[in-house]
Length: 104
Image (cartoon, rainbow, N blue to C red):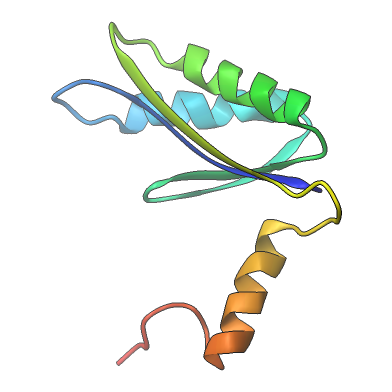
């Protein structure tokens, strides 16, 4: 997969956003993308930007609120295939350790 993105979709509300965020994440299932949700958003991988944009649009549209905030950051490496896991692996190679805090 060559296109990697960070997607954050959230309703602008005072209460918990979890239910609406779950709807956005669930909407990704209808697309040919792989994804992993973390506390700050969802990392999505797709073969094409067309598929990525379609998935992001579906996630945005899935949120039922008067106001929805969506942020999409895309890394489109056009000359070679580098998936999200490999990007982390390279950083960890430079660190010489996992790219997270040490457990006590």
